[in-house]
Length: 499
Length: 58
Image (spheres, rainbow over the protein chains, first blue to last red):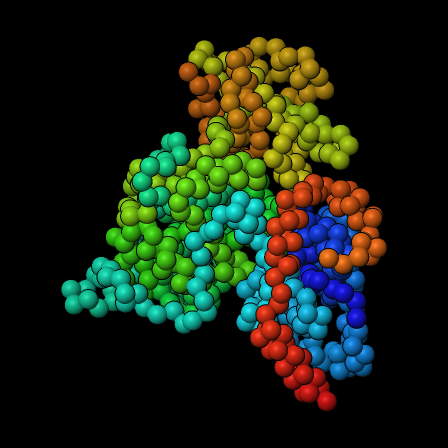
């Protein structure tokens, strides 16, 4: 029998194709040991079907053509079973895994070859594998923990049935201690901005780049309210699975709606199109899916948890075991790890780090020093005043945007170009919008430096956008700006150079 | 450790072309995990599940 050390399921193959270095390092290690990576044919077909970019398809195909990878056919195995028998075996494991044939195939292969199971979706697999079968977890946040040697506080409990929070005394609205009604509105608690706190007892989380939302799950119904209490429920229909995951429980969760980028981490750029759409089509939901990252639990089955300390709320949240295709519970860390987490966030391109006092209560609607956000980049509003056509891979699309802000005299000042942070979809969309705004003369009051004005197309300065940047240069230009998205709710006249 | 003869020298090029900068530290972390043997209880349970699945097929 071929010496297969690990079996990659479809989610693991997608992690590789999307550029997750941990997926590649594992394959490299197995190759160095002279062993093989098993890839079930159904998993390969499913992963290829999911990939939208031809380049990703090409890279995955190159990988599976190496001698390190062994494609495991459906209905055939090294043990000499007849095809029908091998197929039936796969189907039996698929039955355990909610009829997912790819999982059934990968589980059958892992067990037959006594190989580690590799996945980026461990919960999906857990139901079909023997309880102590080793699973190598490719989820990005898990890889961060491993890479830094950080032990995250567990985010999911053993699969024991969730008991009521009878070991913690929480405030119930009823005088008799009976379960109370679920509040109709809990405005989100806000953080103050500051340096990373280290003195005292703090929990640290990554700061996710998405849309803040409070999820009200009442039995089988879900209501999602945004930061300004705007109803987002219909804008993100795939998050209705939250009520399924909670299996009839009544809960209010604080979290972030995110769209994952190619590296498996939240990408604000990928979320843009969904943010602009109040009622997305089924196709848009399929092409630009979102996830809900739950990071706090404010109410559960009649118990008000806002008065409980952060660490107990997180413990209760962990016991809910909120993980699935569209929902997840990101970890938090305690102890002397804050600066390591900042380093990791910087390496991974994550927006920043949140520090939360372990003993702090949840203060609805308040900006509290008990929550400190440590952003790694600053964000500012800018006016789009022109663009340069793209070349090479960006031919036919926008290559970069020329940005401006109004100075104290009311003149439009050039503050730099942005060419990073775009998705292809955003560039196409911008190209169409900017075509309609074209004009023949520069809207800037002062000449734009020659190298930036060259090949520029000018537009009426009516679009406002958010960009992130590292700092300002002495000549008032943005250093390393990166696109975040258009701000249709902002008036260009209000976009001013900092004093 | 298995014999190096079974390694594919082309793999590193494939990973590089795909944009990966594989590090020894990264590989080492996996090496440590792969060095853990699969628990005997899990192997026994796997054998039982495989036999049962085949048994149902018979």
